[in-house]
Length: 433
Image (cartoon, rainbow, N blue to C red):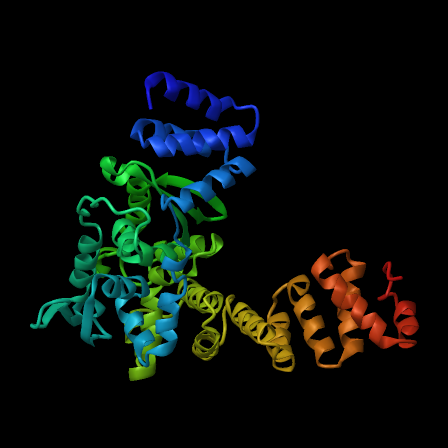
């Protein structure tokens, strides 16, 4: 394509009279194969996205093997499925750390044994075999974790050009298997790969991905750096430097949970996870050094909540029940009961949830927080009048949220004629038609 023709085609692409004209210009640019003009085509596509035109350009690029759907290459639950499938895997993760256990699998390291020292966790050791080697190695656990980080953060070799359309192996090698496996650990969801100009190396490809509800399109190099940034933030520390059960860990775990990242929260809560595991093995609380305090209780609560949010509800329930037995007093006790009840509600064990909710209420948790759950638990257990009384009280106070209005209305419908008695008591005043 001559310079004059290329300028004419570009003008049509950028300001054509309609999409059909612009798409013809797009095909002409791709037929010519001038890398400079192809890069300009992608600039126009990106500036116009999302639109019918950009979707049509994607279809053309896909037909020519220049756009790859990355959905089939990413399994969001690969690590969770291993937790469920392999016996004893979760116990090893408790010691090594969930993220670091995932890192070892990504790198290809096989753990032979974990020798955990409950009194001095920093003295724990790991025996492992690196993929491709026969001899096993042994290292202190923190050194092992540092080794994993160094390996994951090492530089990647420059990508070799791939044919278009690329094979499945070509795509995995180009994006990087480690990045495809790391992505779901950090709530990153790769969607598309654009092949733009292979002579530019990793800057000649673009990855479209979702993260925290936002869709982004970055060069492959920037995408990889984004994931390496998460890895570099992982915590490797000497316990003596900060002390165990540190307030910084609790604050970091709270922040991680507030942004919907329970996996990250558990990394900060390793001291609490190991304490529970060791107590069950030895019955000793010597690891605490001092009497349990509000900070220690808060860490246990956050651990139980993180497990629940990850769907490990049986583990969460066991930990919360253990915490209630270990700490039968204190400001966190009603929250333990409340968190336990939330698990039961989510599993539709409504009758079982009534007891913990009443305990939470009796121990001082605000009634506006407890009543909605307790009202639903009572109603689902066919104790309609009790449910209506509780929800009606909240309704009178203007504290019944929209999510509870439906349950309240259902209670009143189920009561039938008895509803009039409730209204006379003043609990049923609300706009139910």
